Amino acid sequence: MFYLTKFTLALIAVCLGLGMNVNAIAQENTVAETVNEVEKIEEVILDETVEAEDLETSEPRLLPDSPFYFLKEWGRGIQSLFTFGRLKKSELEQKFADERIIELKELIEEGKDSKFIGESIEKYERTMEKIRTRTEKIEENAEENEEVEKFLGKFTRHQLLHQKILEKLEEQIPEEVFQKIKEVREKHLERFGEVMTKLEDREEKIREKLEEALEEQKGSKYKNFKNLEVLIELEEKVPEQAKEAIREVQENALKRLKGDLEKMSPEDQERFKEYIDKISGDKEKQLEILENLKAESKEEPELEKTMIQARERILKRIQEKTIEMNCSLLEGPPLDFCVDGRIIVTKNPETGCPTEVRCIIPGEIEISEESVGPTETKPEVCPTLWDPVCGVDGKTYSNECTARIAGVVVVYKGRCKEENTCDQECKSKGYRSGICRSWTVVPTVKWGCEDNEANIGETSDCTTRISASNEIEGRLVGVGKACCCQR
Image 1 (spheres, rainbow, N blue to C red):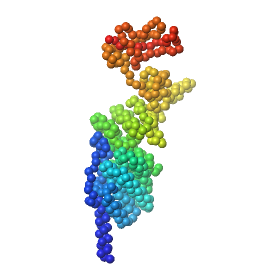
Image 2: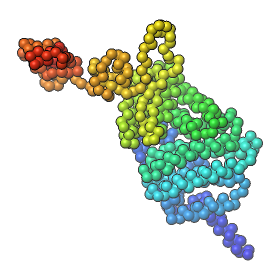
Image 3: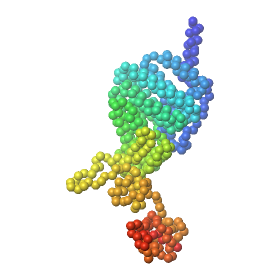
Image 4: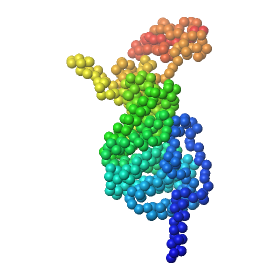
């Protein structure tokens, strides 16, 4: 019996070693360069990269695609078997979750088979669910138990990092398992919120824990931008009692980001636009952050201008996404669209496709009774919707309503095509110059160009106006201009 006990203890020690030290049986693979990483700027790499050491774990040398991986799982099972108490088991499951998400990251970056990636996602999800169910059974909260408070602090720090990893992986993952990781990322936020509010019901402490976790995270001088994106996503998923605390954390992060940008050199502010262009994540939520920054920068014209230019880059990325998703093309507005308002991009709830670019004007900007007089008819107010049309005057209008109010007939939907002027068109054809000449069509009068000039018809600035209702001897009567090229 003594020898059997010794053998059992030795076996347990070996398995624990396999679980904790990840066994050196498998050879370490070289991590493949991630997609487009060479195109990323230093600040983007800093804010997107989460390493094993950030999660207080080691780099895995044994991945789920290894034939020896079962030994690692066996070791985890024995560790769990010999860990007692709900809080201790929750801490252990958090450790396993950290290991699993780093394993998943390695699998994707090394381009491993989708089968192993899918299985790894499922195991990570089950581990996160165990943390949620175990913490539900913890009777004391952070206020009553110092150990619970420590666990919650570490859990908060690590889960914010998990969210960053999942968001980045969503852009790298093979198409066949894309939906699976997207669903896991959304559930992850829900579980994060549920565990946080179960262990801490004091609003000020939730705010404090999040602030501390964000402050401790490494990153670039722009890191508060990425932190804001995570906070917006978290706010959408957490229970109602935590929402106000998260909004306050958002406000503080926004103030820090604005303060940082104000102190930056013009070169760093210009680099911020490049950062916005290349950082991964939800571009619609990033647009929301920029609009918040723009609203806070009204007294800083240069900073506000930077926000408007950065917004243009995000809108271009959203347009590119519509093409990748096989959605209808979303036409982007010009820089001067919605200067005094906030741009939002609406989505089709079924397909997720971006559908419209809208401008939300603050409620205080209204047409008052005094401004139009008590007996006058109020002017028509057009929706601030970017659905461009081309007017007969060659100008692009935001939508049909704005063209109608301007008294302009719409020629076609979409931006006006850029066309050469008469002079430009003539020079492109090898003539010395071009001039618009008036003409009248009657049976006895020829078109307006002189004998030594070539009439090339209409251009953008030389337009024909003919009345089809007037006809003399079978010919239309009208007036207009012709583009005459001079030799």
